[in-house]
Image 1 (cartoon, rainbow, N blue to C red):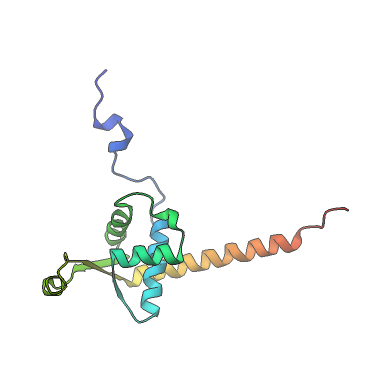
Image 2 (cartoon, helix red, strand yellow):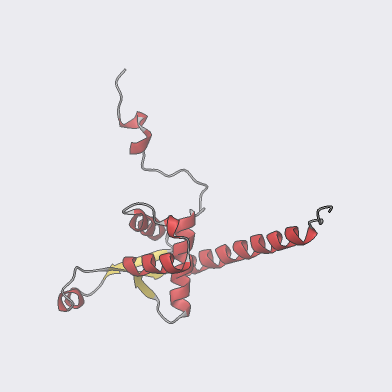
Length: 138
């Protein structure tokens, strides 16, 4: 039997998920971008969101090299982020490579709001479940 790229799962580029569903890293990126916007900073670059995720969210989301940038690309493809290259002169003045600058779109803002609502609902269910627990007999 001849093995080709179609039979080796590692070569499949499509991620299996429900249409419109976000994976946890994508949700965290949208929430982080919404946090930046609330603080008066609409734009961010990859390292900046990675640092934010490390400080605020679960560090385990960024497990492999390129995970973040693939997720940013998927979010841009979905229309939740838009991106542009920064002015090359800024990078030259700071003696560093150019950065890709990302901005949360209106759809991305809605996705972040939906994620917050889902998290809030799940949190209130956990609290309610804990309050309904019966004390153990002594």
